[in-house]
Length: 169
Image (cartoon, rainbow, N blue to C red; front, side, top):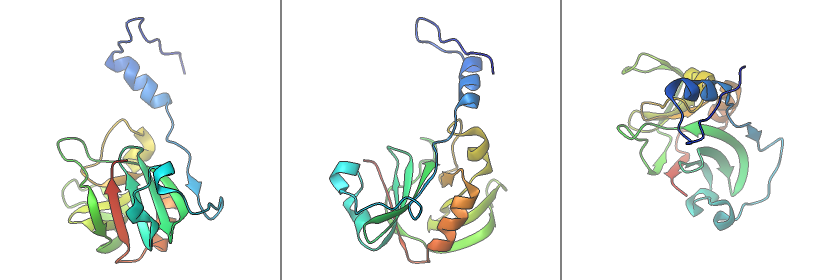
């Protein structure tokens, strides 16, 4: 790929921004059961304390990180993206209300594989668009993942009723 110059002013036009975005990669997946961790310190890691008890999908909007935590042990970490300012992903404490491995959005008619619905129409799910375009885009309010196999693993690990915490650290 050709180099993309950033002007001395620090300004960048849309064409250069698109080339930079195309060259960027989504952060690597860390799977907890392959890289076991000890109980994290909530303050040190910026993890909401509500995430440390029970079975919790812990989603940090500041770091764009989803953690699957069971009894304080991080089992899986995934990079995620959210809805835009005009349709933001809701923050708060929720639970997985229902799951659908082959869901298709009734609003956008886009596939939402491995959907775990936690707040009305908002779900955690694999996004082909996020996998292809990274953070150059947004969901329609859902929590998008970019690794389909890891999302399937998360889907299989979680149960209806498991807690979902969405917050800013």
